[in-house]
Image (cartoon, rainbow, N blue to C red; front, side):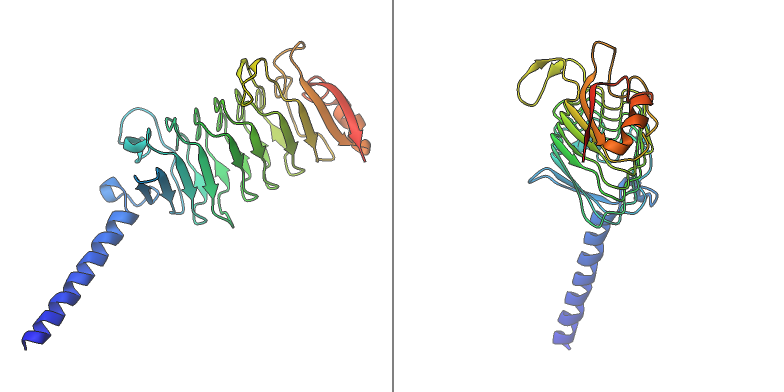
Length: 257
């Protein structure tokens, strides 16, 4: 009888421990099921997010701000699990020490919200093929960001999406339909090689047969500050040479086989 009592007590303890652990790892403050599930590892500064639908966050007070705000200064790495379908606006705004973002493949993220990574310390980002839309100022002011790999599913790139970054070379996939104002305009500052001054894009390759909708300021801030070269296939040359944002955004347009 005593043995049976001990066994039942142990089982009860295990169930309680499992339930508590599951709750701590999978719920947010206030147990709001509309918010993403997340966990922060203080040992290595990694934030893990794995729930399906991340809401948009609103600056103002802690009730509308992203729930990991207490860790903003400590977050160095973010892992987006493949269950997440969207990254909300202002999701990582203020995470000034964030240097790495990993999307677990096959990714399910379809959109990256406005100001999502504003002012982070990312040096490189690989956008998954699942992403269709990159919001306004999504990576604005990431002043160390020089390596951008756009996924083959991206259709829309918002205004100032990569403004004030230090991207040097860029390939625009054939899926891109529209690019906003100042999306890839880099301003004065120090780039990743330690060079100070104006740092517009040096070279862009566009793989789309017809030019994506763009603006005069998409790549260039003025007639005196254009991006370097635009590379397209020979059969695309005429259309790019006449399109707004493309004809006036680059110093030279040349072809490749």
